[in-house]
Length: 152
Image (tube, rainbow, N blue to C red; front, side):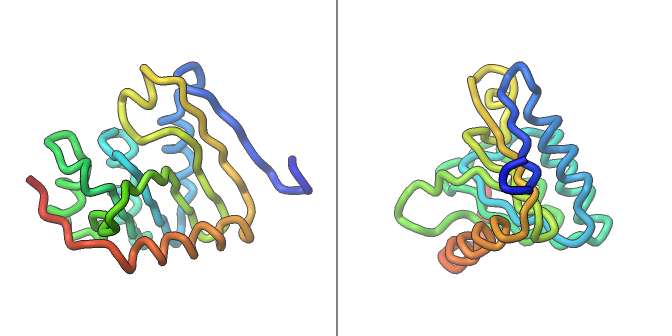
C-alpha cells in the first residue's frame, strides 16, 4: 500500500510478468486501453481478444517499427479491433495497460516472450483511478497521432 492505494510490484523472469498482466486483464469489465512498444505475447494478446469478444471496450496503440511477423496486431486487425500503429515521429516506448479506468499495469515489461522469459523486466500494478486518469490522458494524446494499421 502506498498512500492507501494498492500497488503490486513484480520482476521478470522470476515472477512471470505475462501471467500477472493476464490476471489483471481478466478483471476488466468495461475497458482496456493500452500503449506498448512491442506486443507479440500470445497469452496476453489472446486475453485482450477474449475480453473484447465479451464486450469490453479495447483501444490500443503499438509502435509502428514493430510491424513484423510476430506482432499481435495481425490478430487484432483481422478481428476489426480498435488498435492502431503509433503515428508520432519518435519511438513510442510506453508499456501500459489501463483497465476499467482504475487499474494501471506499467513498467519496463513489453508483452513479448523475451520480456517475460529472457529479460530483467518489471511491472507495477497500480490500483488507483487518479493514476489511471493520468495514463488515459496520455493515451488520448498518443491516439490522436496514431495511424490505421497496415500489417506487413
